[in-house]
Amino acid sequence: VYLREPAFGELLVNHIENEVHQVHGKSGSINASRLAYTVAQSGARLMASDTPLPHVVYASNCIIHGQLAAHFVVETAAGQYTVMLLPRAGGGEERFASGRWHGVLTRHGDGQVAVITDAQAHAGTLHSIAADFRARIVFEGV
Image (cartoon, rainbow, N blue to C red; front, side, top):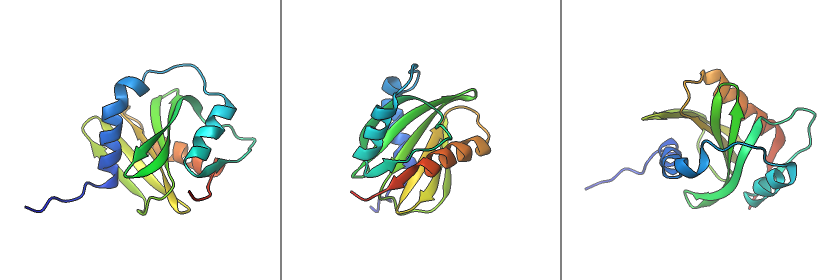
């Protein structure tokens, strides 16, 4: 029996589903040094900018498809969004949906930025959050 390898979006959704009770619903703020540390652990660098990132309420690193990724939850007026920085993701741009989750994967250098939400967000919001992170993150290799 041939089993297909799950699509990358599917892997991310499965990861979110397994961690949702620990991750979503957080409040507060992640300070700049914690944010920079989490980004650095995934082989990237957080660049200084006059434009702030969306309000980050959770930051950690996790293993996604065999690589250490940065995992954030950001809070906007429209709800909470998960952002993942994937330093060695080989795909292109992709929209995906599975059950209550939907998101986008956007290419960034050798990696990808994923934004996932269970909110009924307009696709433009997902792309806007991804663009905010792409503008501030440089993947430097791991």
